[in-house]
Length: 332
Image 1 (cartoon, helix red, strand yellow):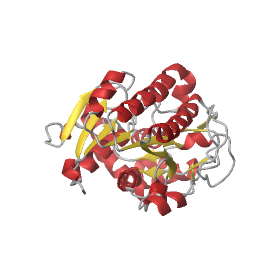
Image 2 (cartoon, one colour; image 1 turned 90 degrees about the vertical axis):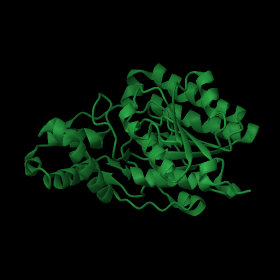
Image 3 (spheres, helix red, strand yellow; image 1 turned 60 degrees about the vertical axis):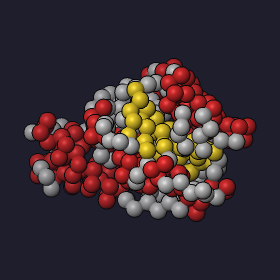
């Protein structure tokens, strides 16, 4: 029997975070029942404040490191979109124990709770960091190297656990290796802020952003709406061939940091002409950084029906408009 969306409950861990809150919005708008689990260590209540009180939305304040929290929130759910994690390579280098505790122990708790609750499918945020020191470009899912950071180790362990659980317990799993996701609600503040929102905030303040290295490292920057789309594709996937595997979640193009900053300056200058004159600075490279990242997305296109709509330039225009509207009152 085919269930209506309104009869399907989706649990989104880390649902108050950047990606998680956007997923909450999307699936609520599609008529699903959504439960958000978050401990607000890196997520923010203001990201989901507009959903509180919605008849199809439930907020559970809890921690994936607590197995009882995981078990309680998994009850009655059909799908888990596991976004909860401690991101950032530098954070993991500075504090590998906490990164492991959240990203490995917390992941295992949530996977176990999903198994025990009879969850249909466990879809989780994997990472392009798993490719490690592999120099192959573009990155293809079945060819990886050795991890270059504690964070990368944790995300690879997630894939191993998901594979074992699908084979041992029969739970359906799909891993999505996110490539440098950016967009609305990505936090520009804090020591481990992602590069795009951090640079936007600095440029609007007419402060010089500092690029780690010479700016020639390249990334497959991926707009948030592409990530929402591939998560929905993973929820709706029906063929057995599409399940119990991992996919690159990206646009499928690469841009150097210098090129990305050039685009930022151009698009922000439309709102504030003084941004065009802000100087870009360069500093030492970061430990654990991958020099180049470019995804082959053929597998996701073929098996999931993934069709990313936003290039870096298209996504940056959307993101810059959102950040200008959101940040201008605090900055100007």
